[in-house]
Amino acid sequence: MSNTSLQLSHKAELRLHTRVVADVQATAVPLGMAVMMTGAFARDLHLHYAWGVPVRRQTRDVDFALAVEDWAAFSALRAQLIGTGLFAEVVGLMHRLRHVSGLPVDLVPFGAIETAQRQIAWPPRGDVVMDVFGFREAQATAVTVALPGDVQANVVSLPALAWLKIVCWQDRHRRSPGKDAQDLQLILNHYLDAGQEPRLWDEFVPWTQEDGFDYVLTGARMLGHDIRRQLNAAALARVSAIVAQQADAENPGVLPQEMNPRSPEQAVLQLQALLAGLKEKD
Image (cartoon, rainbow, N blue to C red; front, side):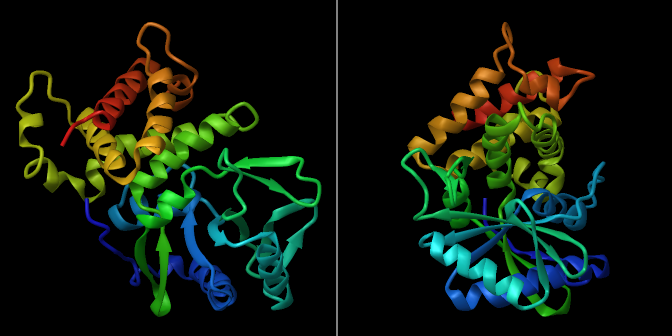
């Protein structure tokens, strides 16, 4: 798939979020940091604003992933953002600020500060550990989004957002159940609707001629195919292992139930289709 940009400059309803994006970039970019929007706002940009997919819970948060050289660089960014008067700290949460508009802003650093296990340990004590696997890979495949007021920004691609949701779900579903699983379900349900359907009738015609062809399941398979093409072997193995464990028809994991409480069996089928795409050979 190509990293086609999203043209959303005409979406007046994005002006408030755009102010936040512009204010973060105005400080981060001069510091030499690569800024990428991620999380639920990225989901909404790809699915709701670009393609009209309805979402149950539109987010007011704006999440940013930031490539940093060390913790001193992150601390400098945070201090400068607060120093502008446009952001206020949230006591007890190093990663969160509040914009003057009232919107919460999450800043997740990655890069040189990662451990060999692809985690970060928040200073000063290092007792809060976060898995940041996938952000480095997602940065390499980010897409450009045009926002109101001639603001240009990078946003995680939809396939990358899906694998980040899978990894985040594994990392935090016990303390924060449901959210990542439901976002993954939404992406799986609507991947073809998000501008990918023409590829089905161009690149993947043989899939449509297979017995039991199913539109939604084929979308999940295409998503797996696209994820596979964005990840190296080690990263692909990690994502595939999570999906395989959860998609076992005889002994499914917790993820299908969180994805679709009314029909976890359908969620298992979607995860199996996703896994088939992850294992496709070019």
